[in-house]
Image (cartoon, rainbow, N blue to C red):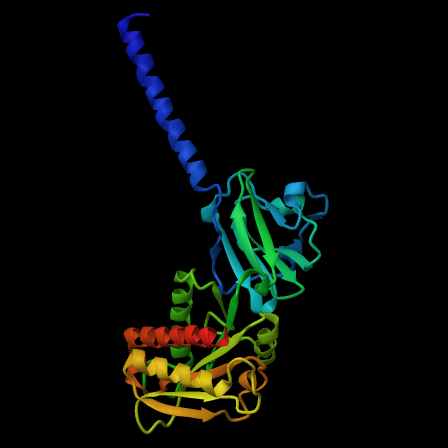
Length: 344
């Protein structure tokens, strides 16, 4: 081999090596990826002709025991998958841009779990995107990852088996109430604070506190579903976030159930923590804590410590400030930490 040929061979070998390393790095980067949480996404499920039952294979290998294993077409990557955890409806939806129409007509999911009430595949568009809709028999948390064999593996657990402390948050929905002179409706402000609280909790892994939310979009679950979620989520605390009307002055108010006496921490004490911490963080006046009226069934039927924090008047200009709502969320989070410290 002459020098020119040897040089060409060396260049080709170098290029091949670089490509191989890049492929290996890409594979390792996507080997175990948590699928994106997209709670609150509105789904158009199309018509009945666009849906069919998913095939379920009960013959599991040792590594598949206690899991739901979902095959993927070869063209699917982690960027093509979105998981929607609809725990309020005991539902798990997985949106897959598969680009292969009818893939799940011929490819079964694999599981030995008996927690599924139904499994349906919905067509989402004409390019192969589908939604796998799994109805569950109870309230579960899950962990999802991709495998080297190009499948999604999902494990399920009851909340208390995975988390030491659980909080159920109910951002009050007031969809009909748009008469406010402010640009922010009551329901929008409550949801904004709740979603900021969600971000804060997800960044704090040291405390192992799981926050569940009765809604994450501008739509609410039924009142009975919200009440049922207190027990189903195995919540240790419940927090209701709302706004008030007809305040004589700007500030925060907390309300509590004065009928049930809860062990470990009474409702009035928790209400005080919410009001005090929110006032401290936001700089708003602590107007007071008051007993709830009996029309708030969510808190009146709760048998775990709970309270409602009204982060301001519906007409408050403060609620148009993202900074104010962030401080209110921080105050709620601090109150929750104090509450768990007292309950221990």
